[in-house]
Image 1: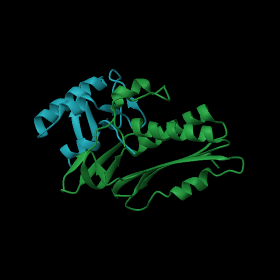
Image 2 (image 1 turned 30 degrees about the horizontal axis):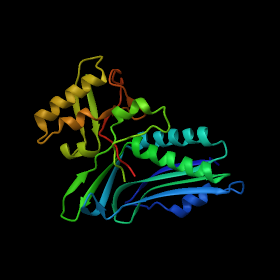
Image 3 (image 1 turned 90 degrees about the vertical axis):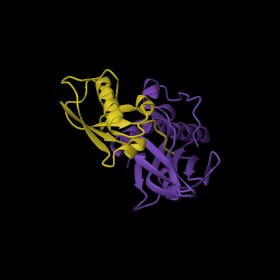
Length: 166
Length: 86
């Protein structure tokens, strides 16, 4: 069985399950586990949010996920398991949008790998978020330009100063 | 040659079908397609934000394309506005 599991979960048919993510990265040889769970929050920049729609270019996103987790393995492995799942479609407040779970022998690698993976997903994956507001309007969130980040893809801990991601 | 451009994110608002077909010269590069899409947007998309296109990348189904790369010989090209998952 692979040490990595990456997926896009269509909200119309299924939900991301954080417990299943932790179970996937479990291993008798591991003592350190870290997990990031991103949920839809009820407010953004002072506006009441009632939901979010995620648009995903799935083929490229999954190829990118594979690259992201393999980079994490190169940096923090070789003993490492990662589960990465991101939602597509319409979510309500409190719904899980993304989960990264990491299992490693010790806690330091787990924390660092988890952080690296979620930052890469946010900054490099072809995923777009449209927020729906209580007043009935909707807006696409500002994000990271892949034109600007492409040159930094080879730097796993590249910084994105100036961006304000949730 | 004709190039099918698939649209994601904010570009979907401009085109209900989420795709446009543009004519570009044979041997065109990504930069040429960007210019063609900008011209199309100015002509056909009310409220078109050209600045958004300037911050957008282009990709094949498997990789992000550099500005000076030739367009793929076949298959769609995808325009990727600034990303923001999570």
